[in-house]
Image (cartoon, rainbow, N blue to C red; front, side, top):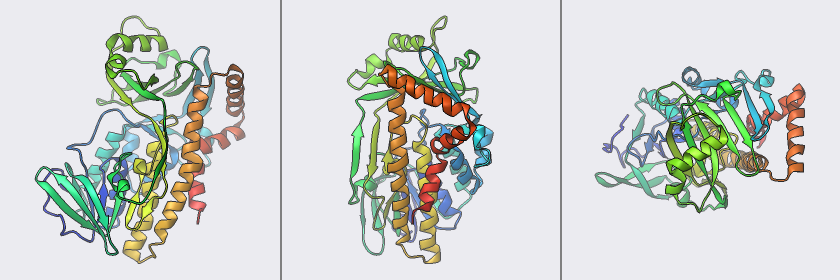
Length: 412
């Protein structure tokens, strides 16, 4: 494995699968292929794994998939198991507490796992080091992609100048601004929210005040979400997410006094919060019009992006990677008809529209509901679900993403 800007392989490795992006989805796809002894080259624009706070929720079906490639136990050893999560009203407190144990008969992992995505990347990299058929090349930015009946050619910007990489297939796991997607005949339709999401991280412990490790806190003026992740030193960090006006200057949003007002408005405490990290990002809801164009394929944020409420985006990308690599391996190794890859597109794009987009849009709409009658009606529904084991199981099958995986697998 090569983790520098230098490469001894460019056009030479023409039988490989090229992957743009060494994020969690790209590295998962690489490991799935490498374990099948399929040559793979990962091209990553950055000089290192990006370790700023990003996604950190792992859902049950994702843990099942990673168990198949012997990664789940590593993840469980590093993350926080979340057996329940809360839906709260910012003014009145807990509305409903959801026991994920209701899924015991549906999955061997009836819980969420809180583990930051960059740590998953490092785990995957460690596993990939044992496979000589895989190269991960940092500081290799894909700038253009072309294809013909025989394969794919990627123009890549490196510290040593432009290079060309050839492969039979290429998977774009290079995020919402994917160069691979831009090289395909597809659209990326949807919309951008009029607010951005602000994430503030602190070591202050909210658990003694009754908070679960995962909390969604509704409010018509300023909803928020609260999660605990292990943090860089494994001692635990709480992340608080807030909506902010997209037109507000970043320096005003990050101003220390403004940050303290926002945190104190959420949970009053003596003295200032020790805010150890601040992150701000735009939020979109978009799905590519097709996940395949000839020998070019999409997975993860390159194929779909959504708001993070519910922790579904990264998980959905993982599900893409497992689905796609199984089919791509059948084409490459077993001589299956490449029409099988069209089935990947039908399966994953359909559930992206039916489940991922619908559920995440609904999550945001519910948490910011400003009609008091509708808000109380929604709360009553949540209370009824939490109080009835059958209703709870049915609800959790959907929000824990099990139903979406089953739906995708059923599509021919």
